[in-house]
Length: 268
Image (cartoon, rainbow, N blue to C red):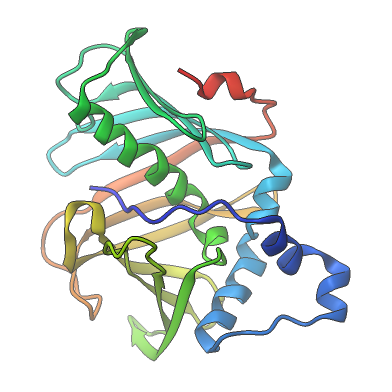
């Protein structure tokens, strides 16, 4: 299971408010509450969405491993303007394991598509999986910058000490336009570093709303952007107490920005 969310492409207005240096000097940010301020400060460390837009695109290797040894390995490609998403799975023991050989998934800004060994697959159930994977994988990668997206709701829940580290806890939820449940995140922001060391999340698309997962992350500086490249998660509760189940791992490697990707890559 992966984290999913209402994915929204940032507008020019939002980008300018956050990232135009002169605007920040003359028009200080107005924060909705302490939670909003903490998230804003977080993005000043990790980079915000304009930082990603300036990088144009990214290519990286996505490796997902379950405790049972099931592995997905995908070459992921995104264009940040429009949130275009492509994944070529050389190994997919967890994602569409019934298909043999290379599977390619894509989102071109309006359509999700799937190919198996170069042949278009029109199976409705398989395409639903693509419609989950493509925006989800994109959101995982861009999550920290996208915490300033329009429609995000912030609630400061106080602080808590875990393993001798003091965290500010911020609940993040999302405006729903169709009354469907949206995901909830509970960010644990390290007071010393200002970074999210871990967060709770739900998976609304699969009805996983009552029992959250806890994700722990480790960052890597890639071309001036702090990216949580090492990740592991498992079931938890709303106090961030985990079960004794083994961890699921998700790692991103070989990250390269500004590859000159063309939109044709993302079309069926």
